[in-house]
Length: 79
Image (cartoon, rainbow, N blue to C red; front, side, top):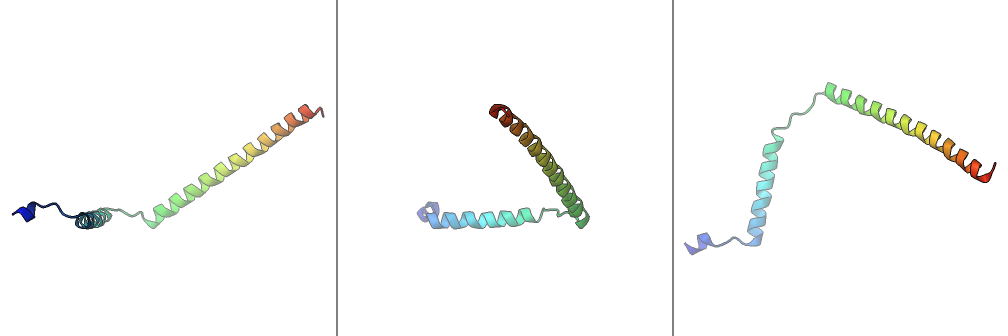
């Protein structure tokens, strides 16, 4: 009876935790609903469009900032 109440060693506890993690992960993966090919295509196109828009915004902002900074530098130089 005393052995049944004895605390498991570190390796046994760790192994049990790993087994529980794998078992729970498998269970959760069964609940995953994967998107259709059409949804993946639409989402990919949306992401590419957003990246393009943000890229254009950064490019325009960089050009404007460069123009302003060059103007300020030329004013400081007196030129």
